[in-house]
Amino acid sequence: MKLIIDGKSLTLNSIENFLLNNINIELSKEAKKKIIKTSKLIDEWVKDGKVIYGVTTGFGAFSNVRINNRDIEKLQENLIVSHTSGVGEYLPPHIVKLMMLLRVNALASGYSGIKINTLQLLIDMINNNIIPIIPSQGSVGSSGDLAPLAHLVSAMIGKGKVQLLKNVLNNEFIDRRKIISSKTAFKKFGLRPIRLAAKEGLALINGTQMMTAYGAYICIEAHKLKKLADIAAALSHEALRATDSAFDLRLHKLRPYKGQINVAQNLNALLKNSEIRKSHKDNDPRVQDAYSLRCIPQIHGAVRDAIDFISSQIEIEINSVNDNPIIFPEEKEYISGGNFHGEPIAIPLDFMAIALSELASISERRIDRLVNGSSEKLPKFLAHIEGLNSGYMMLQYTAAALVSENKVLSHPASVDSIPTSANKEDINSMGSISARKCYQVLKNTQTVIALELLTAAQALEFLKPLKCGIGTNIAYNTIRKFIPPLKNDRLIKNDIDKILELVKSGIILSEVEKVISLK
Image (cartoon, rainbow, N blue to C red; front, side, top):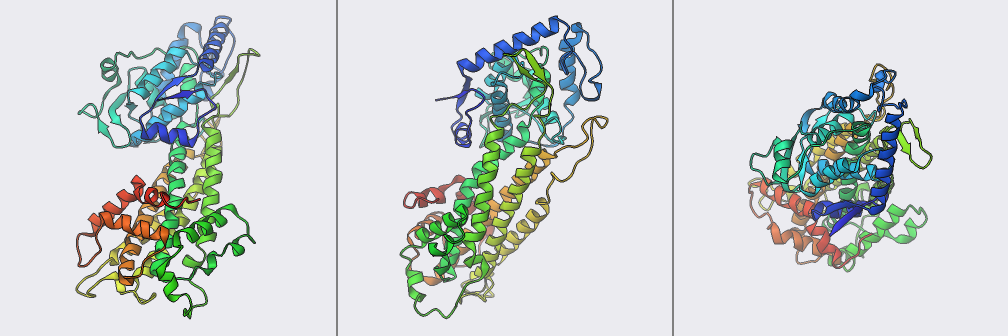
């Protein structure tokens, strides 16, 4: 299997397949033709002495400085080494690999002036899982993600560090030394560092690939998490013996948000034929449940609509040309503009952090109702021998901590700005910060949903022999295959690690979807 790159056809599904199955990539024939044509035009312009930003001039505030033709290659190398200013922890390998893929795709459109052999080295690095070491901090999302991409390109010119991995998702290393020079790595695979020609350094680092790589990964995981959140909510609904009347589709069609209707349909399908619901349906004194149960379609649905919108924005960006200047080979013209600016990604990723935080917040409220001892006659903290055992008391503490952290992380980075490059770049997107914050919110929310699943499964032990609905019963049984009921206190961290693994691996979701097609 190969993923053909043409600059316009990447999707979130193809990106997920690329990561999961370690798929090799190659350029389409049409992309190769466009790339060669544009790079030849750059060579002609340089030979003719044409003044082009970043090709025959300096960069940023130095854009008025003319560069002699004999220094053009040195100019591009200097651009890379001077911009390797990143600090902080290294980016996760799977994010770096996505950055590389997205940069190849943007350059494959043939509007950037890159040479085919330069792009082929980047493709060879991807196909051999030669993953550059890239610090996570230092980008303000101005001319895109300059510093992170410069660290990526420093590996291509033989001056950076890399990791060799068998698979980027499990950090399985080929080289036990873990971090080695890119020159050493290239020798192992018969590759050579490249010398950057005119425009190439600029073409490689002007772009939004760090923030967009995060965005693509977050969207992929968020689409799974939105379904899993419905499953967790349905399990809690069963355990708390709530009413399903609030999920009547007649109600939701009067407020026809797509997400709201889809969640109500999912809940009805998951709870279908529930013995628990049937046992109290005709003699339930409660008129209506708490919001965290009654308003699941409205709240989960709003999150879903946000995820769908953000995904549509990310899919635009992954197939966009976002460097500067942009070359139009047919017209033999170039335009200096701002397609590298990160605002179209920064705002959606701030929005995603807010949406996922709300998904965690409602989940934590359901966890509290399950363990607080005042809801629906469940024992306090779901302990079998209260007092001697603390049961799942601390799960709500953990969820509360993560939800509170999410609230801080959800403050939008995109509303901030700070000028750079001697005020030439006077309003910046901060998109890389939006991306990194959102990634942490995603991980926190995955954990909170996992804790709800664990807590709800334990609560259901006290309702036996009654069984759950069609979908909720599958979810419960899947959890029980890996995590036994809590009879006496034990090392809770082991339970948390196991349920989180079930969430991240997609086992619970896939088992449920074998029987129920969730929206």
